[in-house]
Length: 372
Ligand SMILES: Cc1ncc(COP(=O)(O)O)c(C=O)c1O
Image (cartoon, rainbow, N blue to C red):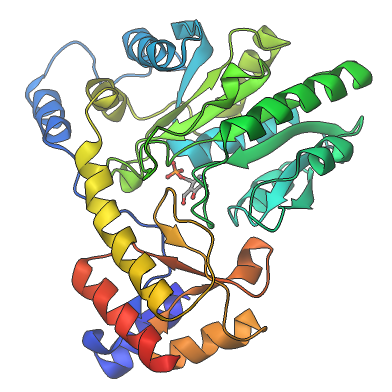
């Protein structure tokens, strides 16, 4: 879709196209990031650009663990944290550390398009469980899908592509169900909680944290989405202090950093991340909330059915015709670039990203209105 949009722009001129296809943050990083970078640029000694422990700098991991512990009430320590090149880097590390060929990872649908590829990179198979009609995952079906071959479940909330936030009740039920399955199988089913949109929510309270209800959680996140640092590739994973086979898992992840050529997260960016862990995100939420409200308004005006837009920066409306691929092709002809739900495993819907400049968003909404 992205390439098609570029071609269309070249043919018709940039003003005839609105690309709402990508989840590429359009907020600038906060002042604290540029201040931290300035410090990094000034320092000329201390071997700040040499190799370090693969898991990352101890002081950075202490900072991250402290912040997580304060937010969740769970006693994370520096040893539970591994700094990674974004959430995608962390997910690939987890897959390599966990999977033997033929092993399975349970994912829901719709979900992030890249999960199956990450799983297949290491010979694993994705076992895909459709969400309930309200786009909340189905606890019973997820638990039933966990067999002796299952190593983990990956879930993401605030969710890409639906914009839904899975409620506390869901995490409690899932935690209980996975604990029961793990006991029955005599091995842990890890829950990999992919959380890069944690701070991008529009609900009154922040999104719930599943690690409060299940101790086999590996938390994966990044500074990509909320702080506009997607291109800088910095994030981390946090193992719940109660996780089973902790030392083996950690050794596997760290070895995988080397085997995959990641080696470690970028040294400069790690130090910047330490300065950013606790920066307030209110202005980021306001930035995207404005766009979300506008999209919600137009969706309602056009009478499109869509799940509640609770977080992240996507709308996932139902297409006005059953074939989402045909619909998105038709929209593309009009100059509006959106992604068919089929890409995320659910037909009949399309995803619209509102992580774009306001004039592009208005143009996109106009094109949608005209096309419908
Ligand atoms: C659900 C989800 N997980 C992971 C990622 C990867 O993010 P990162 O830039 O942190 O690697 C994305 C990016 O779009 C995403 O939407």
